[in-house]
Image (cartoon, rainbow, N blue to C red; front, side, top):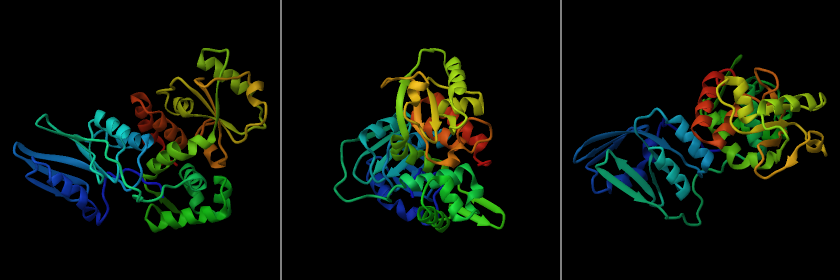
Length: 337
């Protein structure tokens, strides 16, 4: 499965922290370091500091960093332990108040102006670290489950159809989620761990999105509301389509739209951009997205994508307003998915 930031460590996590705690204990200002898994206490010559711990096993990209910043925004102080923190990700984490230590030797520690350590540029060897991330068809199965959790009780064939994936992939993802306790089905009840929204957002931003985006375009209209009104009229009733990203979030939360118009379509026929009077433009504000996952169009209101898909796009976008809106989407719609 794709990895995700954990803000609460499971049984046995303290042992996993061993290499990171050893590096922290080697710091010249560390007098004592203790952790129960999701909390860390560091005693220095000037006092005792408490940290929220985030532990991950997998590779890190910008979507991962955004989900981590979003989930831990309310934590007074936190520290990330990861196999490898790339330089660009490290800078983004540090700019948002994070401390981190990786197994390669990179770290950033800033403690109340008394102690500061920053090391970057160390790179991992050829060996692989962590778990292999969920890709392609498996991510579509996860999207289908998060869009409509009742699919966890449906025949595997129906889940596969709604995900746009094969039956074997659907079966494997179900088994994996059940085995690691992130999907629990009891009678008529289905429970999906909250962290799966982050798992999907990370996988979407780092592998799925690039294969779905059809292109960027411009239109004559400068006003986004007028543009969206025209596009909605022009789209054929025969096409399955919905607003995505900020356009979906605006309709779901009335909080933030952003500068882009994202249009998700189950199929994109030849000549559709021309029919919609859209001109290709690398920096255009209109994004057409081929979305071959029927469940992606399951939403609480018409003409928007599933809230979890809008959430993943906002996380990918990053920026304060986008992440604030992502948090609002999650708060409103996670339990309903």
